[in-house]
Amino acid sequence: MTDPIELLIQGRAHELGPGFAVRRVLPSAKRRMVGPFIFLDHFGPMTVPPGGNGMSVRPHPHIGLATVTYLFDGGIFHRDSLGYAQAIRPGDVNWMTAGSGIAHSERTEEEMRRTGFRMHGVQTWVALPQAHEETAPAFQHVAAADLPTWEDNGASMRLIVGTYAGRTAPTTHFSPIFYVATEMPAAARIAVSPEHAERGVYISHGSVTIGDRQLGVGDLAVLAAGLPVDVVAGAEGARLMLLGGAPMDGPRHVWWNFVSSSQERIEKAKADWKEGRFAKVPGETEFIPLPDR
Image 1 (cartoon, rainbow, N blue to C red):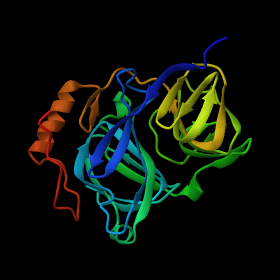
Image 2 (cartoon, rainbow, N blue to C red):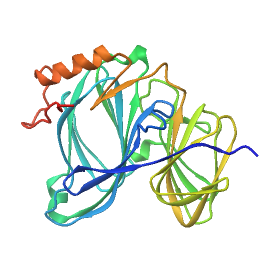
Image 3 (cartoon, rainbow, N blue to C red):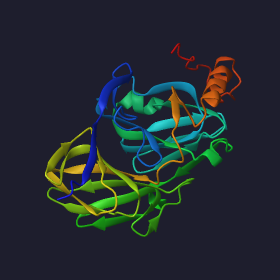
């Protein structure tokens, strides 16, 4: 019998800031990308008390990718060098195309800091095809109500970006891709569509069984290609991110917040940030300096 799991990746815990723990899942030493997804950070769930720090990510740069933020709980306020200032709430999508270069900040709003809040979500980076690596930077906010949603054997599905099971999200994308937020009650069963060449299942809450393996929070199962794969929720239910798409058109270099098919382009981006040549984020005076390594 063919094992439905080609590879299992387990997230590595680290701190994004004081008291703000995340699991880094991609890139992994085992695998750099699943479809165009080259980065996956899972933060929370955490409860931030009144007056707590929350998220305070100072302006920083990106090239050659798109960032996709999706929340289960809480909120983040996004500002970027194009002048966009946008709050994101659970179920919404913030898609930021970095392309030739953008800077942005991500912070917890003052009212949420004052009252306290619960925070839980996933941030991913999508590598851009070589033909679009230098595309003009852009930002798109898609409200939860504008995304395709449906039920599958009791599971609630929301298509964040791309195409899946005959549905298409309005979110910008540059290569074949799918990204589906899935909530499953106890013992629910779904079949992951085989339509995309590369597919992954990330568990952000609860547990599931795939084949004869039980997986828990922090596990990313990269699925074998070409066959439907059943996922069965455990006794407490599960929350999953289904993701993937077509293989990328060649390897990518990743350094800090920069992704490119060209190491020379990475070096230029490093110099541009160090020398202050990226556009500034309106309303922000701080920034994250270029790391020493």
